[in-house]
Length: 491
Image (tube, rainbow, N blue to C red; front, side):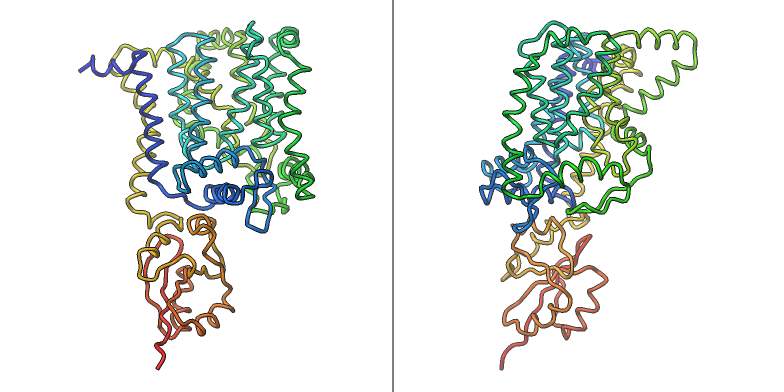
């Protein structure tokens, strides 16, 4: 029994354990429908891009341009939809591949800083954190930003260590990816930790010599500026909304009401640090417990001082905490904003917990494996449960699936009363329609064939009475009830 428990912690076992975690996410992202609002909103934007062939302007609706994000993630998702067809797996696959890239960069940096074993444990820590595991199979822009910033910072570290080719050039490629994934925020999330690390370590002269600043800057401009110019020319007003609104007003004004595509996510200042524990769960809590334990003893404090004198540890610390520090003064935040820092925190935590992770005792090995598997197994089990019981999801997917198997059921005959969720637009391929309460009854009165209406629970009784009880319940979901209207038979 002890041998069977120890075996997964060998280098070969760690590799297959990492593959198993990635495989679990691949499974859940394939079988679990998208829930409102973020995933189907971005998926519908990508679907419209693929359908229209418009690779310059992402569209929020067929009539409204989406100025909230640059197009890189939509390019990747739209290309995947074109290649594999319009379904959840295709829309989510680019994020999964982006996380594979982030994991590879994490392994590369950890291997350079320590050993092969540290590299595999760092990858496992990152892959089994809550936010990276969720992001790996979700339609989001954040994995692409995190890939770009991680590429830049890892390239900076390796170039300064004497590997200017190709890492010196890849530093600028990462900046271009970040600028096309999320915008100027990428410059902050690379420049802030990179500058602090270079100044504190005295490595700025090496960085000046190692990076091709002129050629790299021209490369970034050549990759990025054409799209920004084309986007403004095609839909004037984009640059003002995106650069000023999204990158200044959103963060300094907690009550910013300028968001054209949703609601601002107002949180008390400093909430981002609580989000960090959530995003890095369970490893962030384990790392915090280790820090407190070391602060409580003289030997532990001495080890911390020794660690902080290490150039590698300083890089991990500033790169890992830079997003949390930056967003501490922001009023509108989401936990996904922390993703760019987690690869570096994963290496830092793996370094600190190495005595536990390299344990030979059965108890410590079992604890390490429990930490690795806690999030992947729990979230995968929850995902499979919801996939088997889709009516519990806040998603239009099961409602539309129920509609399409009905006689005469068609999304072209589906109307959402008063409000229509993003998932209804995505799963109906924008065929379902929103209808106002004042327009619904006249439309039903003129109907000559069955129609389908999706209503909130609070509206069911009103509509049944108003429609003279010519309604049949066809599906009950977490958000809406599907009602079929049967017009009177003509005499």
